[in-house]
Amino acid sequence: MRKAVECLRPNKWKVFLFVLLGLVVIGGHIQSWAFAPPEAPKPAGYGVLRFLPLWPIATMMLLPLLALSSPFMDKGIDITSLDTWYSILIVGGYLYLVASLSVAVVENLISKKTAS
Image 1 (spheres, rainbow, N blue to C red):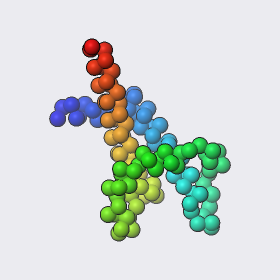
Image 2: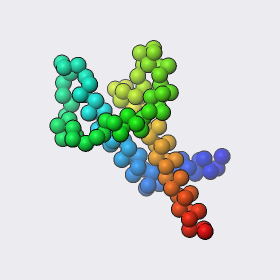
Image 3: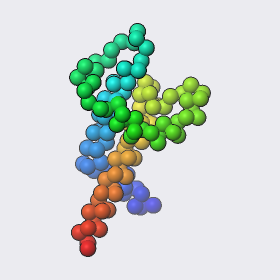
């Protein structure tokens, strides 16, 4: 249990990776305007971000969360839309979990490599 709590405790690398992943997801959300109805207003920053492949990267990052959210989508609740406070909270928590686990895995690999 202590190792799990330590894994989730923030440090500079986890926060950096969390912010980076958050920016990718926000950029992907902006780029998803390309799939919106024609009358939808163009989001700010779309012209700047349209050359970066953020939408496919964000979609692949959120794929496990999208798979878990399919029962909610059947009821009309989209927890990955970033349009409501709970979707921002769920996606943010998921991204922090991904960042924490990624940093923990890298730290574990580094410590094993230096030990041998």
